[in-house]
Image 1 (tube, one colour):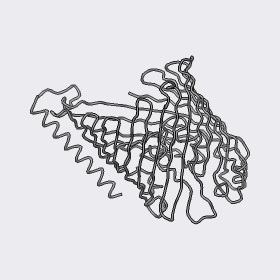
Image 2 (cartoon, one colour):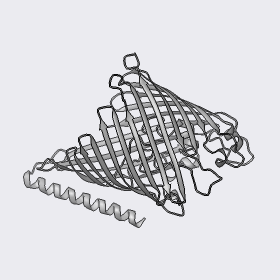
Image 3 (cartoon, one colour):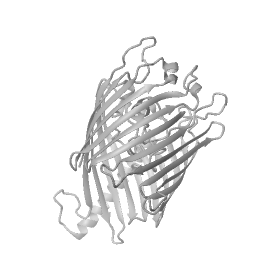
Image 4 (tube, rainbow, N blue to C red):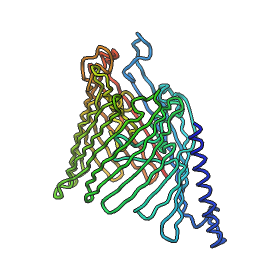
Length: 443
């Protein structure tokens, strides 16, 4: 905690110093002030995001909270958030520039939400607090509280935990790591990044997760990107012993390999987790998709297979894949399923088959259907006595409507059928249904 406070103070002092230096430079050049009263030589930008959503369950979580009581677990709750942000950049004579950002997030969860998702709770705290220097699109260095996203978010995307004492479990308005140092170099088709990240976790479940790593990406044309990443994780041994000292290797390819058929695309990603005798695990995913770009509504059809290794009880070493700091790049990435992925399981001991159809009936509307088949890699590691690998089948439908340049509404309906593994582990047989209405404002 003391280290975190020192980091925030350090970032505040440097940010204040940069602002004072900028203001002094401006004062030496002109006495005019902008209408905001802020130094006019700085390019200021103000943003304000706000969200509100309602979430409803029937037969939620597959598992009864009271032993021996078979009841209809029905829940409904609401989440709201606001996020004001101020960013600025100051160009130097060399055409390079200093930049910085500060933001805060207020979230409230209320209604009949499960306790682990926040209960009736509200919170308000800083999110972004960073500054940096960049030279065009070639060099970029940043330090402080800031987000960092890797590829499509299978391993590394979300820098802050939500739910619990902070509320906003699904809203996920906070993105910034508690402390980050990021350096980027871009040269032609090549990008090299180095980073150190400390996750902003909930006080009641702080694992001390932090990591350092290096990322390389090669862009081949407009539609193909290949990448490789190495990360070393650290954590509180008493909370996450397998994660402390863990090495993670990641390879990925997002490509449309046929120039004459640009609508045909493929995605591949592989991850390996190794930490001596503690953990040895793998995950990989393969997806193919095709867009009928010349057809009305531009339908896109995709199939994805994803494998996240589970623990083999017959071995001493842990083979359960650590889901790490995943996030939502798009519907189904990487919270797999609005029911199973968001509220029941995680990307560990899981095999999924996804069939997806996406449509664009209007420029302002996107809609889709997703069908998941979920299986377990090692059924017996779910619970004692489980022999079936059939976890669940889930069907999701979504609509995203961009009402105007500032407002977007999302509507989701989902239905899941518990498989034999769920019945064996939790004695749950009823189907799970879920609905969501979410409104977002962005300025």
